[in-house]
Length: 364
Image (tube, rainbow, N blue to C red):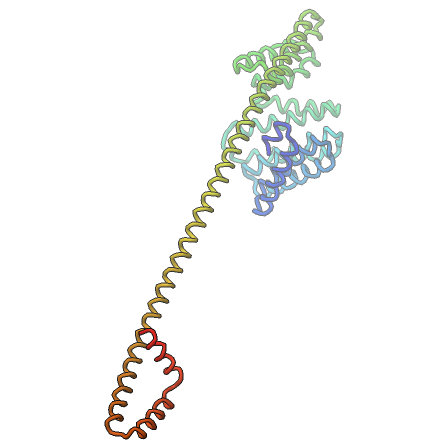
């Protein structure tokens, strides 16, 4: 979500951060909820949905302030100061100054209470003091409240962080207004050296804080030739920034294309693997069904054979018994008595056994 926001893909950033907010609420993650609300506010400010933006920023700040006073330790301090800074910047941009000053006082109270907190780094608290006081200083400057502006300028410059070259640009306008030209120029020279050492003189910060301040400085002192040179430097820097952006955009597009191609290949491989797996499963299923069918047939065939064998044994036994009976009757009886006895035997024999015997005789 932050990456999309930094790349100015506001729609994608909003989509991701709202998903994150839902997850934070579901998992009762208050810290992530505050982060999400704050980023939603920034995105909505870019979309010029100011009321909704401030609503989300306020909720983030209020939750962070409450979390800090319930647990005044490092992480709640960090969350509350960041959330308050974001809110007062947005409120001041919309000229909602009454609300701005209310949350400025909240921020100052948290900073004061932070003196008693043990931070992971000694520099952290100094940096947070400087960035917060600097923000308040700039807001009061935009509100044209000189007394408050001067108060927070002094507080911010009292920190060690304010003495770093990269931060002196924020006091350039003040020194120029006070006609403290030597300090203003020294700050510009040190800041230029800082960017040279970083090997990053083709960026918006160098353009804004060095080249433009050099132009303003020379113009203020009436050195129009040097001011013109600074103007040409600004044009060249802008051209270099645009060329770099075009190269970076082209590289980003190439990377996106490469990623999409890889995703397409992976999708095709996945589809092929799925197809092969389905074929294997189908064949395996048919083999199992076939094996079961063969086993059933074999068991059925074995059962039929046992039954037929039983029928043969029983029928042979009955036939032998009847034969012996007939032989005995033929010896002892007259022909008329023999016929009468045979009729009685056949009438006593069940029809099914008789038919079975006939079928068995036919087979034999």
